Length: 108
Image 1 (cartoon, helix red, strand yellow):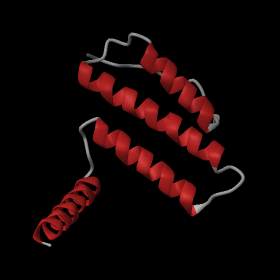
Image 2 (cartoon, helix red, strand yellow):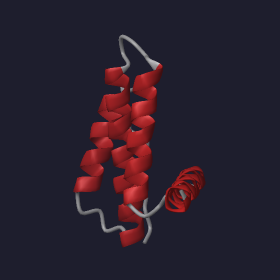
Image 3 (cartoon, helix red, strand yellow):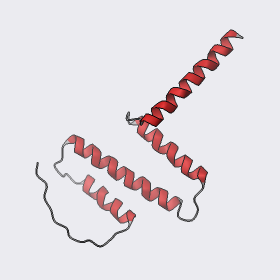
Image 4 (cartoon, one colour):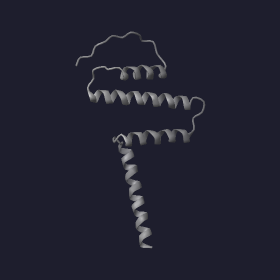
């Protein structure tokens, strides 16, 4: 498949406008392969999450809100079956910790 195009404008646009454009592009049948379609869908989801993040943190940024968003992203990635290395390590540590506590309960 060959893709071609031209630059229509170099004028900067807002993040929310870019997210809308990517979403529209993904929604239209563009003849891309299944792998590219999945990539585009994830890109669109990432743009939408970033827009949400910016709208939530526009006035105030708190450490708790950042941690909450990180947890949501990690959960989304893990539920897709594409866990990051950091998330896998974190999950592994939890399993070790939980298995150790079960042993202690059984022994006592």
